[in-house]
Amino acid sequence: MQGADARTHQVVAQRNVPQAKGRTVKRIFQIAYDEGIGFRRAQLLRELGYGVISALGNEAAKVLLSSIQHYDLFIVGHAAPESSRREIVAWLKANYPRVKILALNPPRQQMTDADYNAIQNGPETWLPIVSGA
Image 1 (tube, rainbow, N blue to C red):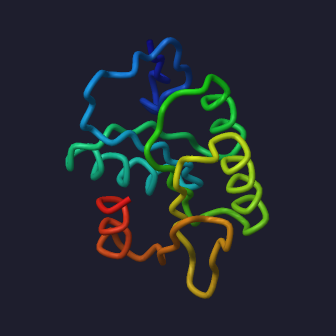
Image 2: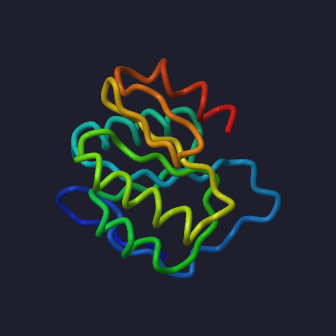
């Protein structure tokens, strides 16, 4: 069961979501820091056949991720201070050690603890990583 905010259509609650048997759809959880960019990224990924859950900011992500669900990839957006992004990458590694993390970065910045890094300047830079992860 999932609940969405009526205004933003963002998932704000998730309970008892069954793990599909023989599932072939990759499940991606993205932490966005810019609502518009996060929405467009989720929309693009869904159009490409991915299952996407989005959270706006670290605290919302931690609330949604407090009930352990299966994810194939985490995407950490670029539009937050480096310290906030590093903090969520460390939290994800501690709580979901087997799930890969793609950090979308501003120029001249990388999240060394993330599994993949890409500059956030268009989907052509990070989509190949998503499809290969």
